[in-house]
Picture (cartoon, rainbow, N blue to C red):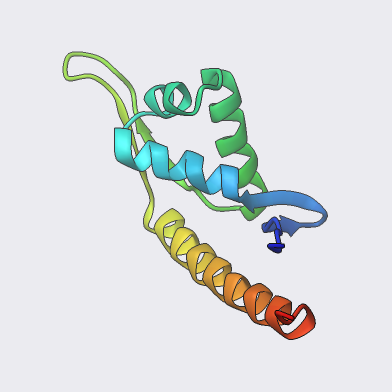
Length: 111
């Protein structure tokens, strides 16, 4: 047996950060584009943009800065705030993973 859990953070009962939303933000950081991030995650651009907008509205903070296309092309990058939230989420996820593993070992010892 192995324990499983899912981690997400809410504000006023609304999801702000989840494993999938963190993956979306990381894809934006890696590709420099919301469109490319959406393609990488196999979701419509509209879905990716909407989820980013939801996170920003619920947190009251800008997470992704965009630059309109044009001669040199557009792009997107994470704000320092987004980077801090990702780092905190990572630390929380690591702590949760350790806690779940330790609790599992204590409650389901090998026979």
